[in-house]
Length: 354
Image (cartoon, rainbow, N blue to C red; front, side):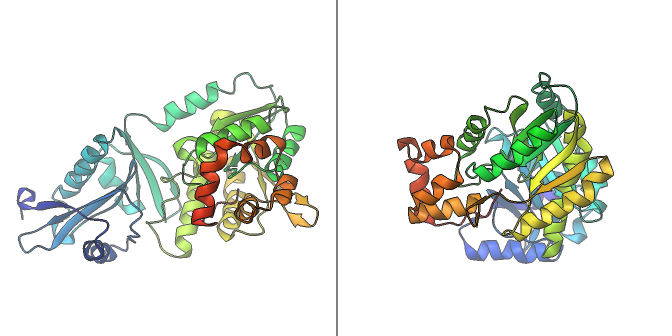
């Protein structure tokens, strides 16, 4: 079959029949399609059977598959090119691709460069304008004025920033010459990134050896935590180990970090397994992992998820015991009302606890 005779069709993500067709096609490649994408294209033959598909989630190319009978004919390149053109219409020119190790040569031939791999489970590649090298250069420049000596890092979501977060960072500040706090840039939390970043900055002003930076696209992002790729426990293992590997292999050396601090996790199973992955992976790169018990307010463990629950229930006295004054001032301000209303309307569905 000639590719020129294949018909490209933009899948209606709101149409259960079209989505199911794509899902069934991908099952033959052991790929899971959960519909959490922005765009999907399917290519059909003259019998109106799917012969190839691919999807976009922001700038992440995913779920790329070509019928076995057509593999090796250059059709994968056509799917990738189609997705890149679609991304370009949204002003996106830097691309990530998450694939299985045996597929790396095929995508490398399409100018994708490997960033990191998670054992035999998954490999993350990138292409286009921008690279991990340029990102590392930019964040390294932001830390040049920090004190010389031992450096530690934390990766936090702070949804919102609590006294629990501050306690872990305060300990890191005492035990190290400099601390770099990377706030997760991925905007999938109840509190927007701009708000979370500002609250962390405001809450940490009293620590002169602490620098707060956006995490960028390489830490706990849609690229390093793609839920579509593997199944069951393999999903968690691939995601957490890949993220830990990127930090150990790339982020920590660029920042001169030799310690990573985390809070222990009594609530979230995924976060607990993420901590376990850090403990297993980072020492291989000479990075010590320090796990600190969660701070308590009275008999209650402080967590961002608990603060969000209290917002839903208007339990403001409890909230005040769990957050710094800067966070509390924001929460009771008129600026916060849109966010709080959204949180109350949707309920406490946001799963990130860090």
